[in-house]
Image (cartoon, rainbow, N blue to C red; front, side, top):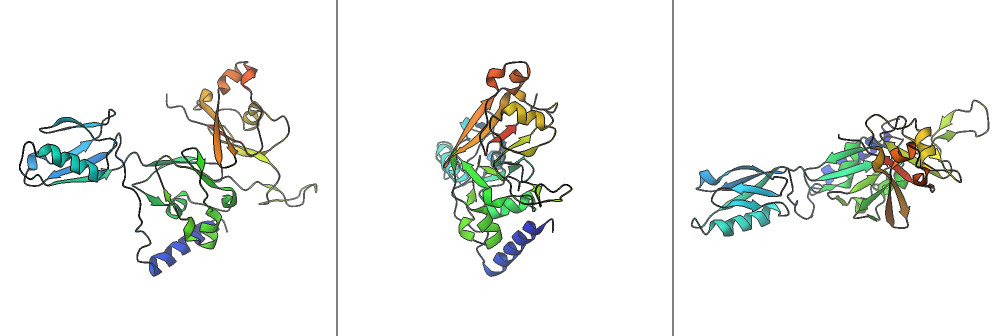
Length: 291
């Protein structure tokens, strides 16, 4: 069934919601404010000081009496303490509350080809299981090979055990700027070598993946001497929206991840020195140009 993983996740969520009062209560660090976030500051008994603020690109807000103050980098509670201290210079016993109304900076990236590549905005620390449910997993998602990258380190989390076995010790909190890699299950013939053999979801040998702004994102069997241009051409070439000189090759080295920047547009113009050799397991990410 196409939505088998989603059904398993839903069943797990329903079970936990029924049998655990604290399923959605978790210990995590407070959200750190950043550019674009909308906060509400309430100063009781001082309605002229109470209003909504949007944090500017310079990380500041303009607050009555105080002028421009830094907001980016604070949590709601630490900003409350700072405002209380500063307002004590002007009013007696200020009673300040800071509420995050719209969190714009809690974003994670999802790549790998097993699900649609996207950027997900969250409202704060979120359990991994809940994020996976939002992604709409199906039988194409290879959870056994999935992983999370945080600060260029691979986290020891087993998404297959979490979703399929209900191992809640794997239900870690997703943090801002995390990258979730979910590769597809490689497709190969059920009876290799037999003409007309139907395809099925069996894992074949070493492969590389290409996702993002190419015409046919896919997983390609690895072969000796395979170069990045070979894979891009096999994927139909770049789309009109591709940022060709910001292509990344994501390569795992043990528990660490290396990102290799490749200027593919330069290669297409004839600079073959940038046509790098690939390695088994490489992930090629072709980002979208916003200009």
